[in-house]
Amino acid sequence: MNLKRLNMFSMENKLVGWLRHVLTGVSVLLFIVGCCVLGYMGWVLATSITVSRFLSGTLIFTYSVLGVGFLFFLAGLVGWMAGATEVLCILRLYLTLLILAVSAEIGGLLALNILQTRIDDILINGWAEVNQGTRNIVQNSFNCCGFYGPKEFAYTNYPISNSCYDTIQEVNSENFNSAQQLKQSGCGAPLKFWLNDNKAIWCSILAAIGGLQLMCIILCIHIIHKLKDKAGYKRTSEKKRPNDEKGAYSL
Image (tube, rainbow, N blue to C red; front, side, top):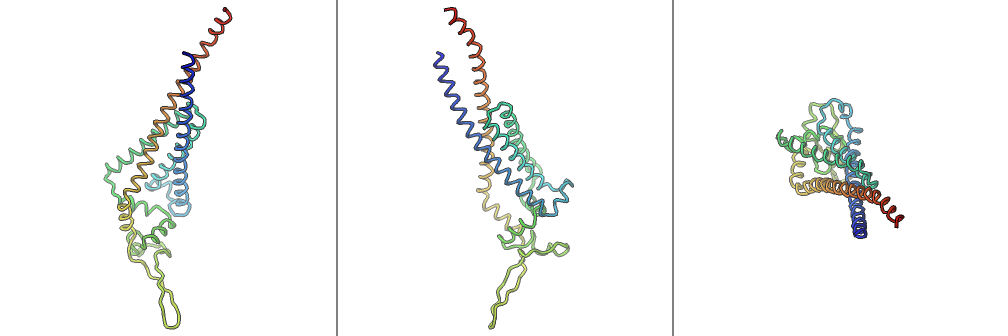
């Protein structure tokens, strides 16, 4: 009977060890995602005028992306430590962070539906809060200028970046001349069309991240229960050991 229990105990140890490696790997992936999001937002804030408005409470897009990035970063870091150490208190903290992260994400989606926020509103707020480097990437990729077009620069003091111009080569009989022509189309419509055309891709990525979080919650609960059973078995064996020794001496 004791041999059977020892075999079951060793099998449970192997199972917990395998699940621990899976939990560590997924946590490292979430940690990397959080680092990428925080790194991008740090670059945006450091190279744009929005850093002076950070404490104004009006940068909804910036706060939301930073919050998501920080949740991924913190949960991934704690999960990394929990999987590597198998400490119950760290595992419980990781489980709490995962539940809070999933609850915040579900609450954010419900808030967007209740407020009837359209994708146009998200793009407008995002365009207003990102840095010029991000806008240059979009303007070069979609061959556009500004969100609504170059007319939005008419009554502002903001300079028009070089990404808003097309270089045209003029061929004369004697030499080549290059001239710059201002792009007339805005980036709002191409961005919306691009998101709609690639909806399956980015929805799959978001669903995969959410699935990884749910998988971490299940793994964390399972490992916590296995570690509790392991601790209970150790306490029971330690209580039985003195009695077994007394019986051996009496014989």
